[in-house]
Image 1 (cartoon, rainbow over the protein chains, first blue to last red):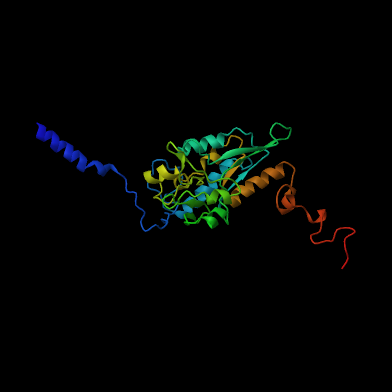
Image 2: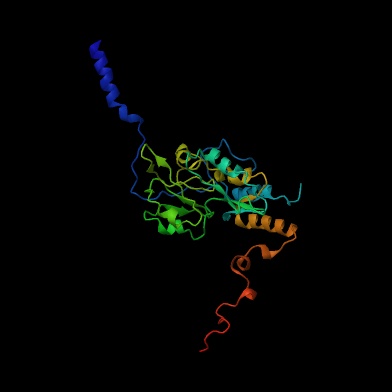
Length: 75
Length: 210
């Protein structure tokens, strides 16, 4: 029983660092950003445009900005 | 290609701080850090005016120019972002910025200055768009979701406009024209004086003649 406990403790010590996140900087250089019209998480996408399509994103931005315009013609 | 900008309409801002709250909530901004704040001029005096201020995503950003570790970059949409993995939290950017945009969270018991945090125009950072790593460091990436910044979209009086500079400038211009005003409410002449108010280089009256 005592041996089993020791083994469990040793195993816990061995895997203690596995939950740590990597904190190193790759080469100390700034990372390059991905284009804004591409996203990994598609759960919160606004409707009416196609992710990954630049022109679709541009027109979505223009259309969305018109939501701030009180004087925009009503459809 | 869109060039993202903010404009705050001082005639409409009612100092409700809705933009500040929207920003805080959207990005889980820590206590003591204000990516956006409302500034009031002549507070309590009749005719007081308020504007909402954050990073203005300058075309020639001074923060970018002074950063000793070159952690800033500008996206093709004109949004000024930074890489927190490179930032050393020196604070040079906060001295350079005329808007007080760079913020520094205090960490631990002794309040050590952390890495710089600022408005991202809801565009996240260099991590993969929409990833957990991006959210933890920079907050939500609304632009990649096809949305505009939360502060502008939540503004109840639509005082704060955000989006493509050409589009928001058109919206603002239309408003001003509807108020019965014209180009006299903005521009170089309004900010720095019109040529009729004094000719540059003219010798003062009674001055020495050469």
